[in-house]
Length: 230
Image (cartoon, rainbow, N blue to C red):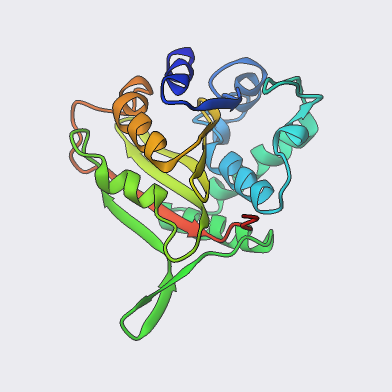
């Protein structure tokens, strides 16, 4: 975790918040139940997206008195809500597609609306799917950073990794990029170009997400509307 966070400054970025589901109180809570033992990335990212869209801070709910980008004491009552949400995604969705649909429905209930794009004569949800290659991440980072005709977007990003699926999120407003990975925390970059360089040249390898066998690995990026104050 520290290795990843140290690379952020090298690309003029900042660590906004040092959340991680891999250690401390959060880890102790999620391993208590079989449904959450593999992590709560899907539910935490859904909550993060909702808070961002509504201009609120997830960290003020998860922790009692967080300070200077670091966690305080875990608010177990609120975190239980996140665990229950992750459990619902797993128990009520027998397939990855069903779990995806459940999350989309939950986000919609929270006021998070997906963008749409024109495909021929039809309008469909704005999402990008592609193959993951450790040697060429261009398509992946382009999907993360693209905001279409608008100046902003918030993203739910699903990654197929060697050890299973993982979910991260990103919010783009103008040039500013805020990236949230439940394993490493919330990070921000002053430009899309800085984020792109960091992701390709530091994050992908240091995070451990790069794999010796990158065949049959895919990504999915869903674009949602983000209030643009610029």
